[in-house]
Amino acid sequence: MAWLQLTLEATHSNSEQLSDLLSQAGAVAVTMQDALDDPIFEPPPGSTPLWKELLLTGLFEADIEINSVLSFIEANYGELPSYTLNPLEDKDWIRAWMDDFKPMQFGQRLWICPSWHIPPDSDAVNIMLDPGLAFGTGTHPTTSLCLQWLDQHFHDSVEVIDYGCGSGILGIAANLLGADKVYAVDLDPQALMATQANAKKNVSDRLETYSVPGFKQQFPTLHCPLLIANILAAPLVDLAPMLASHVSPNGKIVLSGILAEQAEKVSTAYQKWFKIDDLTQEDDWVRIVGTKLE
Image (tube, rainbow, N blue to C red; front, side, top):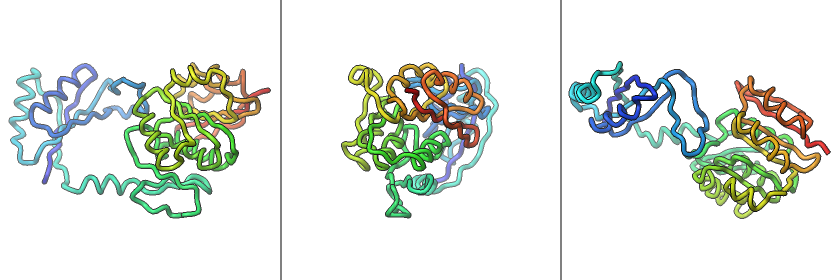
């Protein structure tokens, strides 16, 4: 079956109405895209990532009477927004999606492998993880930077906190690289579900998931030799005292989700408790590593 894409220029204020009109006009799917290349990588739980200017794309069967669709939108909205029409090649979209995700190596020991691929190196540390809705499959520099650090520096039988666990990829990597136990913490229930499913495939009961309130209640005085937090710069700054309190003396903290221009502010927020050992940049993103002062 062939398809036709109708893309409307929209704004934050009219996007919901125009999205509804596309659906009412017969679109089988409607997607939202930032019009100004200002991505939101990890919106707060429960929020809808809407930008000031958007592109709304409705997917229609190719034989639809597109002039009728345009007239319907104009009649119900009051005026027809600027738009573009593009035919869409018919293909096996599931297969195309799967082909986009191949095994990825991080450092020397660590691989992330989708379930439909055989690990390239059976003797390596292989994490079987499929792309999903929760943030974190290794493809983004913020995750890649943390995985590279774990591969290069982590080999201890210790307890680890993965704060803002997303898909669980970092906690699972720590488990497979030697951690005795990982406390995987997140605000988003969907992230905790994804982490549990991925842990079941890889590490069984050596990783435990906790909501943020649940973790605070159960482990107010927990100290671990390693805490990883791949979230965003603003919450990293706000959470600095709490995160620092969970790291043992001489323990390590690994922070990611930080744009290069935010690195100084985040580093300053942690210098009261940590000696900053390293700032490593990949593309526009920075990883900060520190050692807890005694």
